Image 1 (tube, rainbow, N blue to C red):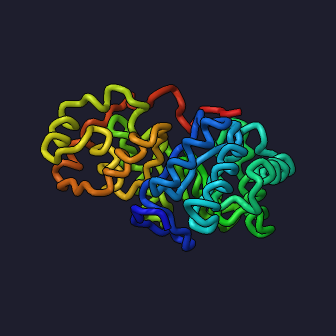
Image 2: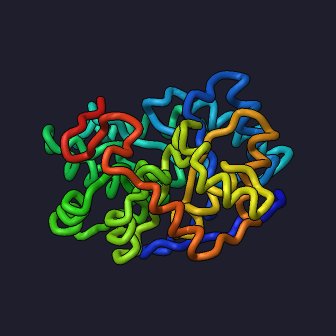
Length: 284
């Protein structure tokens, strides 16, 4: 196992994930493969991807290469996601098969519905396809992204199967306290996309800088540690190995409760990075 070993968290169904993952959005081709190999070499085991990122093959290539040098296949958790345009049941099933084929791996460890697309209203069909894909051995665990409590309740009511993961936008300007509480109550692991606010002004918040100075850490490390302290699994992207290692440094930070509360208080009613409210947003 590559060092450092990252602590883990477990969902209601037994899925165990490291508390810090690695995002691969925009990492493509040979450069992307090299960046992901570097992440694995540095100790990341949870790799996040999506059909719409058009890099499932890149992730698979990095995993296969790393199996020869850095980490065995069963030490890694490869994630991908179903796009909104393929929510119809048969299309979803075919897309999952295509995702597995693209990776060149025998199965995908975690497969998520990327957005609920409630106006189209076919996310339950898509969820049934994910359940069947798990039963067929195409994927090992299933979950969702950007699902609100009402969407999760409907999945539970209509299929009897609750997701083990809900990946949502979450950062200090959008701390998602209500959704996080719902997920926690139901044993769902909350992952955070864009946990650093895409490098925006959240990194320059005076409260974040104050905490960083207190702990001798970078603002990014503080924000990742804040997420982990709240029971969230951040999945930041970092193409350089230096930044990959910097992000891993968040695991060594132990923020005080008052520091966590002060950063959470930075939340804004309009804190989303863009206009992507899951109640109305449609992803294709």
